[in-house]
Length: 137
Image (tube, rainbow, N blue to C red; front, side, top):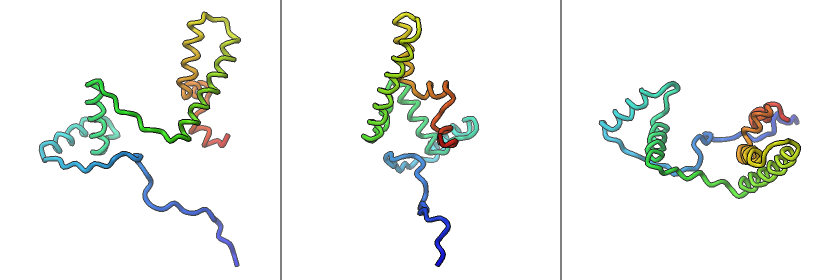
């Protein structure tokens, strides 16, 4: 008896596209729908879908009123990984900044940038999560 070439299980169903937010069904009257479609037509390419346009309009409205949308809560495992990464970044920044001659306030600013913006550091080093996945390193 022969074995199948690929034993990996196939993923089933439609992939998740917008996360685990709360689904809202909204009914729009023709005038409001026409306004939404006109707003979408005025956007640069690629044009947003109706749901994405509604999200953007809401986010813009809340931002103008000084209300920020609460960030999505990360799982405890993700939060723990992020905390470990910040600790490692802080230790590495302390070592690197200990070797340079600069005023204390400049060192503090650089340390804050290194610890709080690891994506910026990865970009400067030529590494990103996407590039790492592609190369497998």
